[in-house]
Length: 309
Length: 269
Image (cartoon, rainbow over all chains, first blue to last red; front, side):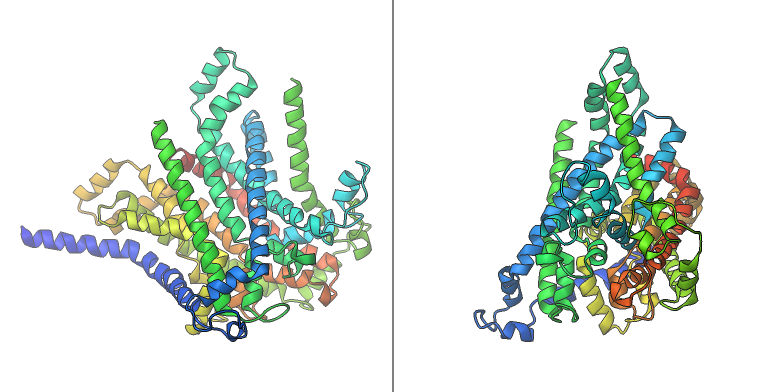
């Protein structure tokens, strides 16, 4: 009996090894080890840190100190926060509006509309950036021709005016992700039990009360999930800004996002300094903060949700 | 009634905003620079495919090779990631073992840790492992997907436990049961495979760091074609952009019903 139990235990262990092993192996090799390496590297002293006399030369935290004293890093962080906050808010609002508008249509028409809305999500960020540059941007661009000039304003030089560079990046991100968020919310609305709508119809509920008492509560968890996804993706935004601004932060660094700056610090070329320890410290700080913020949000959301039930 | 009309108008406007620039892009790949710089004009003067000829001539980039490399990289990684994360999802949903919470936590951590912030460390690690310039290294580096694990855990949770009990009574191992259950989650497998393909297809920073300048993927090629210092006609970049978008549109179009069904099921669970 005990022999058969041992044999079945061994079988279970080997089965688990085959199922989970490859993932754990790849996760350790391409995630955990580099992360530990990066953390270790963030404590190394680079030639650039020795050149700064105001910092303690052999302090283990020298790169973290330099990070907080780097005005460009602070600027890139501010830009990233504005970029992320605006992208999340606008995309979720638009996505919810579109999903609820599509929900009232037939399945075939809503399917076609969803597919059309998904086109920008499926395009490469580089394609979006080129399109943004060629189609929307410029005096003769669509934004000026169809929006700014008809409203009686002077044409805006979108990519050269520091005040408009960041809004351009936000618009590009909203344009890219709205379709995907709409698809997710639409699927969530489809999953709401039909008796709720029947009851609302029998009680003569208005469109607004249908929206606020059935559709919104039905998809609020998905809105939260979408928000977290957009938040993490926004912090990691690189390709769109890289293509649109050619790897720089634009005029007066108005469009300098965090990853672009970390890339500039880490690699030579342009403004690059080949200062990998400083870049590692920046990445660790921002990434760990992102994980903690998201984790707390998820925790509080779950707690609130469990109280509701 | 008025609200409904406003709603439809806004919907129409947003649909136009999503699709029109892409129609303009495809048509503009037949235009000269002068025509392109006047974006209010939609139709080209002639349908001369000079930009496509230039793109495939290899004068600026070897587009065939770029396209093939992108398809193999994204396709290979998507297929591997789908099966490997489905196996973990199955173990988490149906297996009985200690450490499930830790494994779920690890997967969540992979999702929440911004990928681009990870790329610098990954680059350093790949340098030390002499994997720089290797497409295979790039391919397997993105296989351990946290999103895949959480997605498939939910998918397998929907499969009745009675089926699993039956497999146990028949003396099937967990691996054998997983293989038997795979046909049941075909829509979810296809959906995740396409989603992962799409994420890998768009990856820019890691290929930029890991691959050499002679080993471009589509995002890198588009950045090169859009670089004004090379003085490449704009139509060539737009032609490449159109050709890079079409495979994904076709893939999504073919499997759109599957994707919608799988996402709806996932949302419910």
